[in-house]
Image (cartoon, rainbow over all chains, first blue to last red; front, side, top):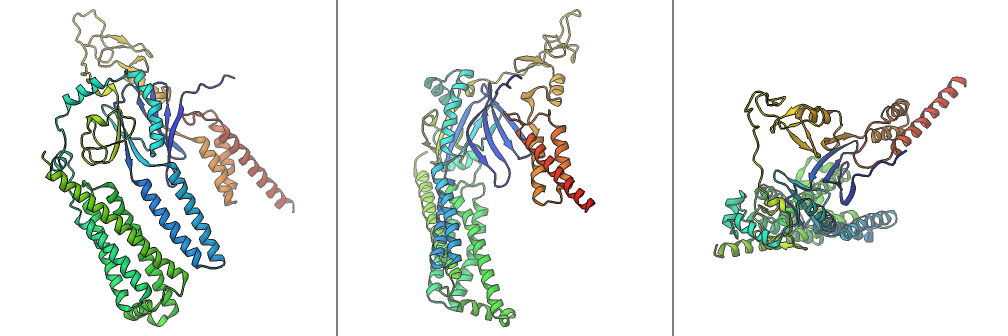
Length: 337
Length: 187
């Protein structure tokens, strides 16, 4: 029996979907093969070395955001574990360990990126190259193969081509809007959202130590206002020129607010179960909730800690990013075209 | 034109073919662009096929009024420059390419494959967890593993280990159910 000829060699990088789907890249004799495996079937895309015009790798902040989120979860569950006893402490320690492991793996994997491949008629994303390390390694492997098929490109030829074809030159913010069809977002709603989050975090901290009906009500109102401003910010940032990091920070607020709402609902259910009499009276229920001290239960304490930490984290990150974005826009706007 | 993938702004010359990442002049994201000579290549203009000059010249099978320039490497039909498709170093006609794609004879044209070996293995394993469905799924997995033994699986190198595992697992399940029913019948 003759041994089957090995046509394809696996290239670095792999992207796994949440449930199904694995994206990989394979080096063929005259082409690059991108495989999108959907568990029971596979989709193939071929890019011939002779047709590849460019491979563009862009660093993203996804890895840093994952690190922040995983780090926040680690801290929260570690705090839960330190205030719990017996089985609860063991459970939270295990959860902390799982999040810490995920954080370590994400940190070890290095910075994240998106990689695109351009041909004369295609502009395709290569999902498997989602880490800078693997993207650089893959480009290093592919470059000789592409140059073998196309010949090498001298810097002089590239320079000549660049100056012949580039008419845009350096781009001012106004030019950016006009030429790329992306609207400019001033970022005021993002700023308001960050401020609201900081206020929400501060009120939660006050409510933790000085439990009162008034602070509870203010917390609810600010929470609702945060959700409203968050929706506006999400709509406004769509197809806009806003920083990707700011865009992601705004998206990160969405699950946080969902968790806040769910935890509020769970607390309300617990209060109703403890005092069935307040079930039909909204004001009495709010009073009963505000009378609950977070120091009575480790769960309640953990929820408060989580709210305060995440509110401040996202609020401060959002404010810094908005400030940088607005300053840079103003500088570019002031610069002569 | 190479553009930044974040802001779609044109990238400056300093970013091209550098070993590391450089800031995009428009949006400041860190970016690297590896460009190749194909970027500078002019796109060839499409040909419409040369008309026959004299009647005794060979004409294209698909366009009899056009001059044949080559014959199809698979079916031998005469082709004009419009119908000639160069693929994998061979000159083929469109119908041979279509047939080759349908019959999976031209590997480089395949863009989808069903992984029967993975399906058979999943059919042998997953229902086993719920016990009762395996009465039906074990024979189905065994049938599938045998029926698709020679069917092409993934385009990348792959052994038949999944099919073998599916046959063994399905066989064991069938044997187990046979013993169970025999026990029920003889009790």
